Length: 353
Ligand SMILES: Cc1cc2nc3c(=O)[nH]c(=O)nc-3n(C[C@H](O)[C@H](O)[C@H](O)COP(=O)(O)O)c2cc1C
Image (tube, helix red, strand yellow):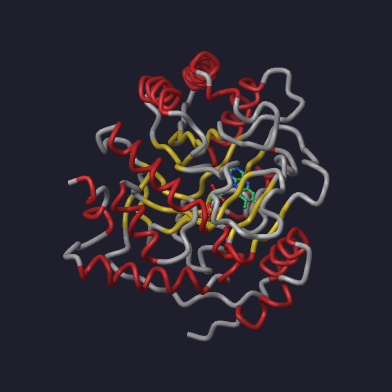
């Protein structure tokens, strides 16, 4: 398998990180990014959100906020995608620079602040590009100047429900003022009640799976309260985790003190610990999406063994390019077989048994 990325990376990484990302999106849109070999392996085939997918590796939210290229990412090797975060009204996000590469750490810090084209534009592209075989999620967020953030989520859920396999309630964004207000049980319960009422009112209810996404910067007590509210509501899945505002001591990059959420390798241990904890607390009954610092098959396998039904990644693409997804899948299938698992499903939560 020819991998062009090692030759391209020095050029891309001389660009400002956000510019490099925009060029990547343009290249994907133009169809000039070479596709990855179709790598179908029965051991990787799995089911989540009621749909069978080729492999359990998903594209995490934030890469394709505006639904421009998600449909191209399946041929880059992904088994599913998540678009967004999207807000009801278009939003500029925070002033630039707001995205930083920490090359030594294979990490990224971002404080994008939910820059996106707004739900109408994003929905239009989603509908235009999506085919029935694609498992797609939509990551939802409130506008920064919203007077009623819960209403934003309800509006988004109503608008996107007919077009998504899952909707993510991002209740953990470190980069906007109201990004974390639903980490309090009261406002969270109110949000979920209003979502239930909205789905109850729809004449032909199509309720996609609802997932909640949280960050590792959460106290145990806070986590327990949130889980009680979410499971009481009947949440369908959790996505663990978002970026962290913490900076582990071994992070060395010159820009490590930039404000924002950190993703990539230094997030792996913290996000996997949270995943494992939530798996244990929910008795393995709740489907979990493991995300945070996955940069190899060994990482993906650890997330699955810790309790993830599927995994997602973003930052590893910045440092390794898309062929890493293909390598990861090949190696993951080998690891599953080596340990006597017929498929991904058999390995979920194995470290808890
Ligand atoms: C530039 C950037 C933008 C992101 N935007 C969002 C977002 O809008 N909503 C969200 O839930 N997560 C967002 N994330 C977080 C990712 O979905 C993921 O949870 C996090 O990056 C950890 O995975 P990784 O280490 O594989 O990148 C973003 C991450 C990055 C790097």
